[in-house]
Image (cartoon, rainbow, N blue to C red; front, side, top):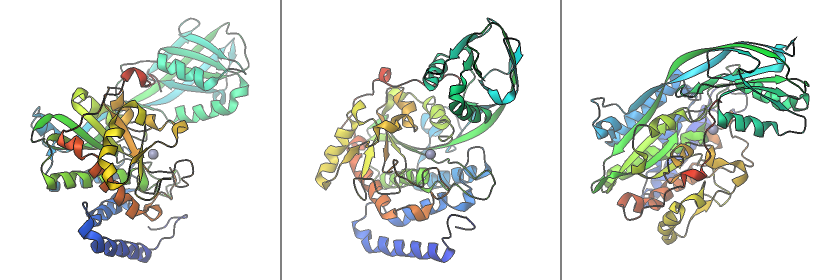
Length: 450
Ligand SMILES: [Zn+2]
């Protein structure tokens, strides 16, 4: 790790750390089902400063994608397109475009008064807006109303809304304003809508005029997907996934969000599970390995991916998120989100009973983690799709910080989690168990506007 204010881990220290782990791994290699040496190589590459935090749309995230694709090729996986034989494109890189929408100008007259810029915010998927009284639905959020709840409902509903927000909510308004000013990213522009917010104590809307413009540009993103065709039930898919994007660098450009735990650790797991099952070569179901892009900015990688195959064929999704540090249940243990939504956890635990271990329930239900990773997208389509993690999110000092680098990880615990997932999912791979589907009606929909 080079010049970082928060972390002075020298080259020497890093080398000795790796040497220790390599000795550790060769010492125990007899007992290993997944070589820890390769696990260390993968996470070291993915979490390195060279990749500058793997920000979506950056050149460095493409380097990470190429590394993953090269690993898939060496392991002997097939590209998804070859597997589906829909095109001759034989790349592991699944490229697609998203629309980035940046607000350019906004002016609002309310009850004949011009509103100043600092009291305005807009989330829009429409390039040009010009509203007079009656063109948009108007709402007043009074001082005792639940602003977040109202905005979330309008977002679910879609359409065009003018929202007057009482000054009592100034702090929350600022937070939304900051978020909206960074612009929106959308996979498609099928839902055209806008929410214009005005911070004002006006309690009546007599007249208004709103003019706004936004700039929409197409940007490209890339998932990396590899397939190990099943020997007996090739139509059934067991999906192993992670996200390989992270937050990039700090605004001043001086520090790197390495994202070693989030989610170089999960991506390392996906690579090494692919290698493990490819070496075994006896998977009766088709195994699909996917490293998703753009999770941190809204889960666009998994959204695009889910439209490229029939989700009914996906028997289970094992999404691996932040497994680099021991969970509150101890070293090498793991928990899963939404365990009560399908019987996948119960089935996996039948396999683990022999090892005297188990997959635990998500210990932080108040954090809403089921919705905070790529599994939610597939769950909306009925797939038993869950995230497997070991982060102690309630007190993880490194979460979304520049200190989430390799020196903060416990690689021995991480290695144990990967091996445990390999063992736990064996009966899915063999086709001897099929988990119940997730009830789509019980999975909250995405917002339509922001
Ligand atoms: Zn994250």
